[in-house]
Length: 367
Image (cartoon, rainbow, N blue to C red; front, side):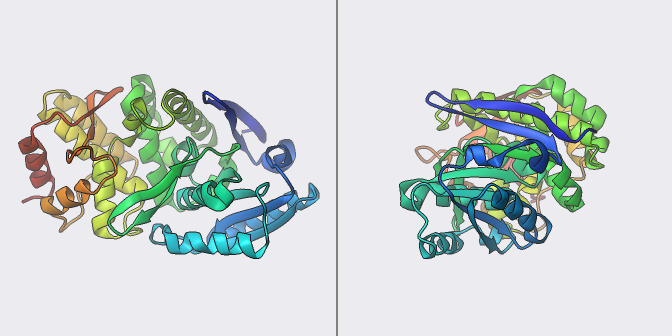
């Protein structure tokens, strides 16, 4: 695959827009980061895993463009996505006397991106930020759309804000350094887009999932482009999640419960979403929407992507219900679920028989 910028998409919102730039080893050669930075003060926020790989490279690029650039290295892991570690960002910004024209750059996966975005949304009531996602999951999902935030012991992403970046720079070349488990976790979110909105893309994934697992760059570029295009369209229509954007939460209500009960960081977000999606698909079948053959295809694709498809051993249906009851998508005491009418079409509902939900959870928990 050629080096350079491969695709450029726009997230078009009512009052502004920003680009998603997809490429391979392209940042230093074809993209001027400076045009997306306001002011001269820049803070790059990354983690202990990514810093040795890419921090010096990014600092050098910014230095050549005459920015005053500092960095903050956070510990790596979902368990550190909390207010305590957000305060480290505030401490650094205030110690450096960064003003309202400062720009934060998130260099890392979804945790770094969510935390950087939330810090940017709240420091001095809002400063600019840029997303440079370094995982598949972050490139296709968390870096796009402006959801930022941190976890609370009682629930995932319960503290946050909608706050859009100035741009998203997705470099496929950095994915070569990922652990295989992280690759699979990202594929869970890619599969989601086929399930909720694009049956043809789901079919394509069935034909190409092994190539994606092996990090075929051309196939990855296509999958990332389609995923980002789908999400950009949904976000443009419903930025603040009053309607259609909720479809992006397929598998997430069950998945967040798994993350909460098992302890943040023990299951990767994509792993929990994969299992949660299989649970949502089973419930959709029991409600008479999905055919058994479609359910089998969904489970098989997740299995081929090397993702977990069964509930964690020892987790109970009661734990699911209690954790799901704390989910931010609960309205008027009713858990809202994203379900599948068919492959390629999802819907949000709180109009379901609780007995069906309980029976599905008892089955997956082997009770």
